[in-house]
Amino acid sequence: MIEFEAVSKTYPGGSVAVEEFSLTVPSHRTVALVGSSGSGKTTLLRMVNRMVEPTRGRVLIDGQNVQAGNAVSLRRSIGYVLQAGGLLPHRTVLDNVATVLRLNGLSRTPARQKAAELMGRVGLDAGLARRYPGELSGGQQQRVGVARALAPDPNILLMDEPFGAVDPIVRRELQDELLRIQKELGKTIVFVTHDVDEAFRLGDEVVVLRDHGVVAQRGTPAEILAAPADDFVADFVGANRAERTLHTQTVGGRTIAVDGDGRPVGVMTS
Ligand code: ADP
Ligand code: MG
Image 1 (cartoon, helix red, strand yellow):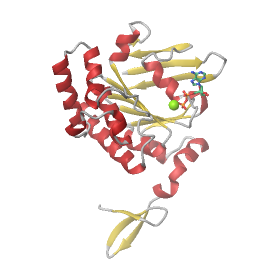
Image 2 (cartoon, rainbow, N blue to C red):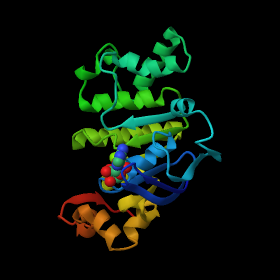
Image 3 (cartoon, helix red, strand yellow):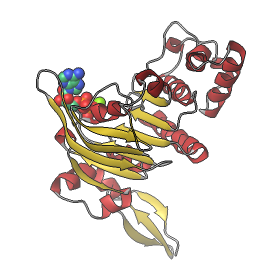
């Protein structure tokens, strides 16, 4: 479980990124933080692995203040996936994944074996192991990023707009893959995105942020869709309102669901 207790962050120079943010992320669940660019999402995420130190407040993991222990071992115990992948360009795909395991004390051969296994888990063909990151598609690079984050078998996975740089179809595939992996592994995931559809697809719970990390609403996707807390949330989740507004039509005796643009999206059963 991750607890943010009234954390604030003012960067040197006086920029207030986050003001009094509190949230409990339950274990084995995915919480999606969604907000516009500059709303403080990255700052919040990085407070968990101490890449950012809060100005006030604290972050607890399973009741322990993250500030209490050693920052390096903390970071090695938490998976972190970034938009750009953050892969080492001069190491092969296999070594990118294996490096983390080596840092955690595994010797070379078992590290490579485990890395190959992880590649399979994220849907990467074994034939890609000897390639360099630059020789992969954007979607494949993001899979390597996920494999690397999973390598030390962390309880916590922090994901910062990890699928933001790939096209919509690949993005959807990566989301499906994450849902599948999460079903198998049950990590505690904090997923940051500015895309409300992505947040609704992936989050067991969604936290809608205003500027300065102010929580506009928190709830399950269904709760937020059914009852947006205010106009800000309604506007934000309504970005694709037409797609989400469903009607029913009777066609040949069956009831069909049709979206706001008139496209059929499914068949109703009752
Ligand atoms: P998001 O990830 O939601 O786009 P960030 O957490 O990156 O938001 O940024 C929140 C605010 O803090 C922004 O106004 C940003 O300009 C500012 N900020 C972020 N990082 C720094 C930094 N290292 N120094 C100064 N200001 C920063
Ligand atoms: Mg960010």
